[in-house]
Structures are given as C-alpha cells and as structure tokens.
Amino acid sequence: MVAFPLGSKLAPLYNLDWSQQQFATIFVAALMMWVFRLLPDFIPALFVILSTLLLSLTPQNVALSGFTSGSFFLALSVFGLGVLVINSGIFYRFSLLALKHLPKKTIVLQVIAFVIGILLTSFMTGKNSRITLMSYLIQEISQAAGYKKKNSAIESIAACGFFGVSILSVIFMTGKFNNLVLYGMLPTNTKLQFNWLYWLYCASIPALVLILGFLIMRMLLFRSTQNPQTSTEKIAHDLAELGKTTISEWAALLAIMALMVGLMTSSISDLAPAWISLSIFYIVLCMGFVSRDAFKTQINWPLLFYLGFMISITSIMQYLKIDVLLSTHLNWLSVFADKNLLLFFTMVYFAGILGNFILGSGITPPLLFMLLLPIIGQANFSPWVLIFVLLMSTESWLFPYQASFYRNFEDEMKRTNLIRFNKIFIINTTFIFIRLVAILAGILFWHKLGLLV
Image (cartoon, rainbow, N blue to C red; front, side, top):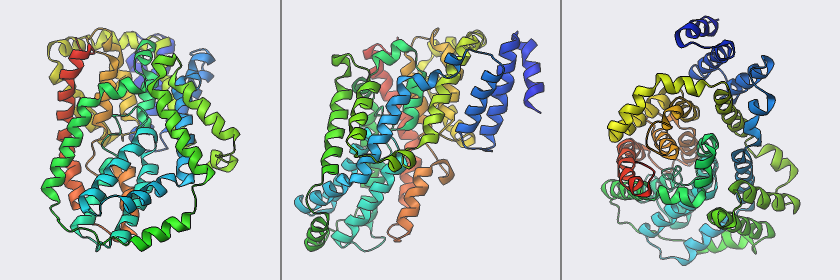
C-alpha cells in the first residue's frame, strides 16, 4: 500500500518509464520487508524476481541470470565441500594431533586456535559452521589442558579461536557468503581479473593490519602466564576412539587441497573458479562422501537462493537501465570520490555500519553496492575496492542480534559456562576502528596495484 504511491511519485521526479516505475514499486516493497525483518532475506528477493517475471518487465534469462552465474555454482560447491569437512571430522583429528605433538604452553594453544580458525575461513564459507567446529575445539582444549572455567588462559584461547574464524572473513573470497554474492554482481571483466589468489593478494595489507590489531589487543587484555596441565592420557584416549584415519577424512583432506590448488592456479589453467570447485564437488558426490540426505539438509539452500536472486536483481536493473538513471543522479558522488578518495571510502564504511544496524549484514552490502555501482564507471577505482570496503563495514557490529555467528558461539560456550564474554566484546568494539585503519592502509597498496587512480 505504501510502495505503490511512492513508486508513482518517483516516476515523474526521475523520468521513469512504465517498466522502471513498476520495478521501483516492487523494489520499494521488498526494501520495506527487509527493513522490518518481516521475512527471511531471500523471500523479499524472490518477490522481486517473481513480480518482474509476472509483469514481463524483463526476459526470463535476465530475471533468472543469477542461477546461471559462476558465483552460484561456486557457492554450492564450497557449501558442499564444507559439509564433507564437518562430517568427516578431519579438523578434530588435526586438532588432537596438534595438542599431542606441539609444546604444552598457553601461547602455543592460542596460536593453534587462531591458525585453525584462519584455515577454516579460507575454504569454509559458513561462519556458523566454523564457529561450531571452533567451539568444540575450545572445549576439547579446556578439558585436555586442565584449565579452570573462566580462567584468563582459556578465555584468551577462546578469543583467539573466535577471532580466528571471523576477522579475516573478507580477506578470502570464500571466507564469507556475501563475498560470493558481491563477486557475482561485479562486472565481467573485474570477475575475470579477481580469482581467489588475486583477491587474497589485494587484501593482504588489510589482513596484516587486522592480525596485528588482534595481537595487540590480545597482549593488552590477556596477561595470563599459566601453562596447561595437559592430560596426554585424555588426548591419547580421544585419538584411540577415532581410530585410524577414515576414507572420508582422506577425501576431505584431498578435496580441500585440490580446491586450494585449483583456486590459486585458476588464472594459469584458464578455468573459472566455479567450474574447478564444482568438478571437485561432483567427484565427491559421485564417490558417495556426501550423502543424499546431507546434500538436502546440510547445504544452506535459502542462502544459495538469496545469492541467485540478488545477482539477478542487479541484471534486471542493468536491463531496465536503472543503473544509468542512478549514474546521472549520483554524478556528484563520483566527483566527490575523485576529489577525496579517503573521505569517500570512510563515508562508505560508516554507511555500511549504519546499514548493518538497520538492515543487517546480509542485505546491506548488496543493496549499497547496487546503489553505488553506477558511479564506478565515472570514478577512478576498481569495483572490487568498493565491495571490499562494504564487506569490511558490515563485519563490524555492536549488538549480538547483528551477528548470528556470535550468538551461536555464545550459546556453545554457555553450555559449559567456560568463559566470560566482556573482553571479546571489547576487542570486537575496537575492531570497528581497526577495520577502518586496515582499509586506509590498503588504499596505499591498491594505488600501487592500479586499482585506484
């Protein structure tokens, strides 16, 4: 009821034709659903696609283009391989072996938790899945090391594990679901330029700033010198219960290695990352390492549909030339970006934080990218820089409702009453500013790479 009159008022104001007016009305209605959280994020996106098809605003191949994009199949493959890794238990075995063979010191356990978190982030797109694995590892470390509950040592290890699986989500192309959504919305020539390895290379300076920022906060907040009283008997017992390495574990290990090598060498092999990952997942499916039930129930299909719908919406806007209209009316913004790039990206960063507060981290990056994408052709920077800043901004949160992965972590830890969360909150709040510093440091590097002119 509100969207229709608003769409009618926009038509004469911006010289919209009939198709553009109808799409504006549909999009405003979807935006209201997103703002008020009336439905899961993918349903308003489905509403946009369905309404566009019913009104014949675009051809079917345009309205459903997201489901034929490489990003859709890349996300499907990464989700599927994540299911294999979780079900195989390979990382649990790896964690126990690390506890058994590495020096029995708290600092070593902190490094183990942090490094395992980064390894999981590199190929496992779902943050909640990574949090579940890390929570189990932290509890295992606590029991094996003999730490008392709410002790500073175990809290420092928990912090290393939590931030290990979360702070570098934007650094890896496959580290966060929205990375793949926005990657799918990039212009074709930019997608060809940014394979998995080049994305990591371009994000390397911000990554170093984030890691350094966390290490400084860890040293300031966690000063425990207590070393663990590691129970080698318990670790040996747990390893004995696991038995010999299973075929599923070997399959998971080989699949991860093949995926990493394939993604890193995609520019050399001239194969798209989507088809490399899909080929690996196809072999895994054919050999029965991911069951039919796991394929149906453990892959996050609503998120995959959401990805397809959001990429399709971008194609619809381009087909209806709404991007041209936006470019005309936002020309002043591209002029501003050319004059003061640092201030422009700072504004985009805080706009993303505000959007995350209002809309949530799922919908904010795609919406802001759709809005700002038209000015990129006039501004002198790569579209990848814009999506990186948007993704970094929506990683920042203040309240638990903004981060489902944190709520998952909190629930897991509260079951055993293992840690207090106040220091994790302090680090998280500080990271709002550390991420901005990481972006500003990255700008100097991106200038040298030619991503900024």
